[in-house]
Image 1 (cartoon, rainbow, N blue to C red):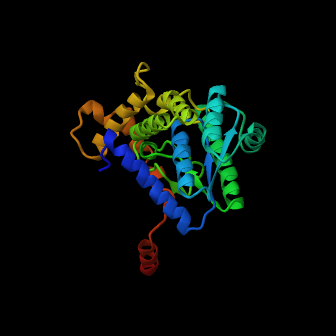
Image 2 (image 1 turned 135 degrees about the horizontal axis):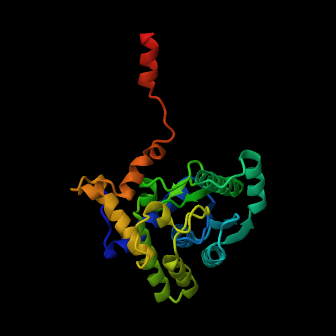
Image 3 (image 1 turned 120 degrees about the vertical axis):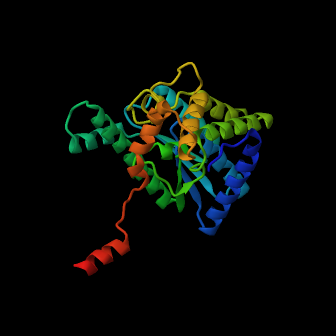
Length: 291
């Protein structure tokens, strides 16, 4: 189940994603793809693939990108998002929603700094960005591109009703495969002298990954607190993926593995993967009959 890809697989993966995306756009008569660009590896990879999709469709479909900064986004994240937007998008803007977000927070929340409040305020950021992206898609006969990957899905590392999209190019790729595909494309761009595009990808490959919500300094502070800071982000995610892969495929696990923080998070976030939970018709009808 979900075996990791080899290096030689990435060209085929790239072509398959492009083929399926083109077919989906054509069959649904869509004219644009809308993407939230954070300056992270996931949205950067999707921007690179989406631009190739546009080229395959003779640019009859446009890629619309927005970097929506809110309060906690660092200067480096904003710079990277601009690099990505300029390299790949037909239509790109940086929007600062800090004031709007602050007004919403003051309206709906008490003023304190507990960790739960930080998470809740981060979720508001994700949902606010989602509203803008879906509005753009509606105005431009388009669809919103999802930026989640399989590792994040398994770990519940996303915001319900915030990190969403109409079409997931990389939803079923492990995070280490996201890095692998991005590295493949960066090399491909460089070989074709597309140095701006290659630099946008390599800069994001090397960057410390964050949730873009200001909850912690890096993904790993939340997902894998015992991580080795001397390793590259790609290497750390390989470790996380190995733990997840062994667990969901019922490999032998030591007693230490069974209480691993990655496995614990996988179990603790199962409710998110079942959302929304709907009572089955059989149960509803049967309960009515018994009464």
